[in-house]
Amino acid sequence: MPDNSALKLLTIEDSSSVADTDPGVFSSIYNADINMAIWQRSLDLPTQVYVASLIKSPPVFQTLQAVMQVGEIAPWLSAHLPNRRGKPALIADISRLCEMFSVLFDLQRIGLRVALLSQAMCPRFHVDHIPCRMVTTYGGPATEWLENNRVDRTRLGKGRKGKPDDQSDVFHSPRHIRQLTVGDAALLKGESWHGNEGRGAVHRSPPMPSGAARLMLSLDFG
Image 1 (cartoon, one colour):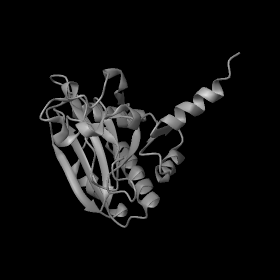
Image 2: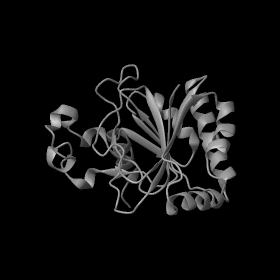
Image 3: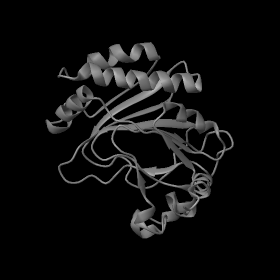
């Protein structure tokens, strides 16, 4: 039988991202060669039911955004999210992610955004000029990204000369585009992370089919 361990190690070494079903994977973001750490997970049924009700109905909100302490988040969400079956489950999940984010980076306050979208918010590949951000998609298409060795950074921003991603040569093949799945929670290291200039995670909002909707969460340093 072939020795697959060498291939596995090569894949890890060539990758700027790491993924696991254990939330402990988040600590990998502190590794200098990692700019994306993904907790692969599935949403429980009550959360799925609530999210589906938000996506399928006429929009009841567009963006909920605030900067606050972790202990303030659940009451704030309870006051602002629509009252439907499964609401406590979504609030509990968001609160859990906020707690993890706060502990991992020793934050007193967190910038939280819950967005219900009908079109791509950031449709072109880009980097964020922040230390780190957590993103998760609760329903609809999820975030897309490129590994470090699959992106031409000179084609980002002004370097794309106004061309869309598929014409700017920022990537060489659509096969190189990777995508999170619903429920995955990902840490994306930005350009402002100490020592990470020129290596920020390259990502974009996914294309949105006509009539589709997306519910996503992002967490930032407060």
